[in-house]
Length: 107
Image (cartoon, rainbow, N blue to C red; front, side, top):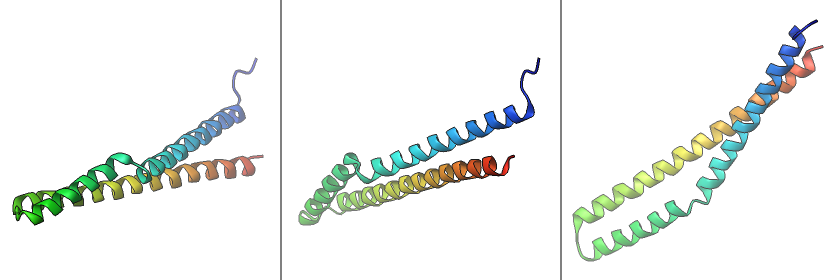
């Protein structure tokens, strides 16, 4: 009565690795889609731009400085989110590719 052979264990590990790659890939794509079409960032950016214009018109230097800091922070946040999404997408694709390669090599 064999419980689990070495080949069965390898196959289960490969299936787990492939599923992990699929999940990682999908999360990366979801982050990229959400970051590209995020309403919150666009709304904050438009309101901040209006605030800067009003501050320039009324010569309020502190308001303009804080608003420009907010704009640069929002820009950095969107770039970081895109970087994480690209990394997860590539890493998930690599996991799936390596798993397929192991299945083809394994006899």
